[in-house]
Length: 256
Ligand code: NAP
Image 1 (cartoon, helix red, strand yellow):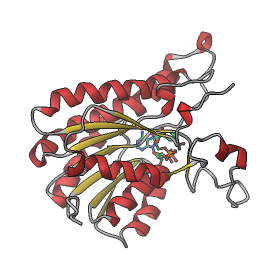
Image 2 (cartoon, rainbow, N blue to C red):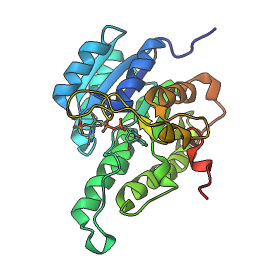
Image 3 (spheres, rainbow, N blue to C red):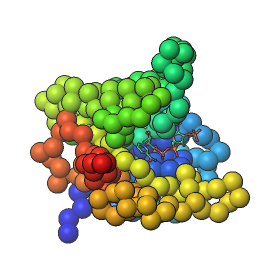
């Protein structure tokens, strides 16, 4: 089977842990070189030690709310690998509990929007020249909360909804130059880190948690990584501007 991703270069933001770490590991396993970008320096170091055993990595401390960090991260990528074929905008602040809308502060709102929406836009801006050169692609990681909510979800939902809109806008702008832009909206995804309890043991979902998904299980990070691999590959060359919900069918289940 041909593998058009072999020896290509991906940047994964938020790669120190969680879904980003598994996306990075998976892309290394299919033969890519991967830039691990994250603001958590200590964890990044640990993750890089683990992942560099699989394939070529570059660890770059980068806060996606800081444009100068992003410029340096892109320059470091070009310096080391001379190209960028895929940008995976995964870094995000996960579903924080918002204050009541009557108490919302601009400071709280702006922190979520600047990380989850402005960050991906700035990373895309700085990676675009190299992506145009390689005819590469961008994948934003949004959330099902872009299209479904519960109370006190405003900032996160709006940031992820914005990412879906950014996806189709950028796909139109960049399509003419051969760059594709897509978005994945994960549902509930278990990660090693999110299920680790304070006593060090793993939290295990109940049968009811699994049964609330039409496929009969809660998601794992590899479910997202597999979709990333597909979207950045040649197999997806006719797909751009789209949002893909990867949630085991949960948003399609009616509660009565
Ligand atoms: P996670 O475990 O919290 O990992 C996110 C990583 O991003 C952390 O290493 C974090 O660093 C880093 N990060 C946060 N802000 C950053 C910034 N400004 N610049 C650079 N790095 C930053 O999250 P996850 O559960 O893997 O989620 C990954 C993405 O998927 C997020 O965008 C999230 O919204 C989305 N998502 C997750 C789920 C889920 O069920 N897990 C569902 C839907 C969508 P720190 O450790 O310092 O915070």
